[in-house]
Structure formats: C-alpha cells, structure tokens
Length: 51
Image (cartoon, rainbow, N blue to C red; front, side, top):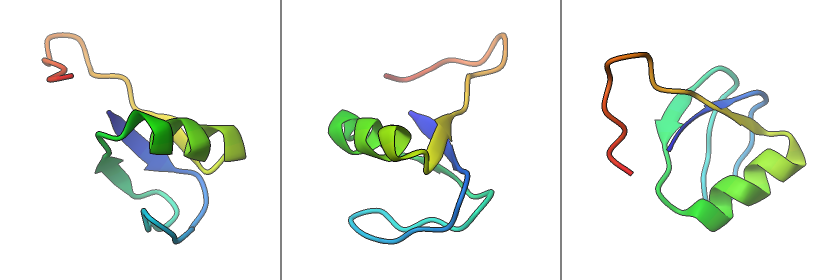
C-alpha cells in the first residue's frame, strides 16, 4: 500500500515528511497509521492496486 509520511520518523521504516513509499507489511502500516505518522494514498481512478 502506498502511504505518505505526515511527519519524519525512523525505525523499521524511515521516511521524511511528505515522502511517499510503498509498504507491503500490513502490521507496520497499521502501527504507523495508529501513531499518526502516515496516511494511505488512494490509487487514482484507472490505476491498478497490486495488493
């Protein structure tokens, strides 16, 4: 799933504020979202989501 960093952070995944990254591990995504560090980037109409 593509996510966008709302703040800079480091750990198992490191991202800078505004960076977009494709993260496959759903547990890590859930943890980062719960902490308010990232938001999901929805695919634009017509784009395929490979998950």
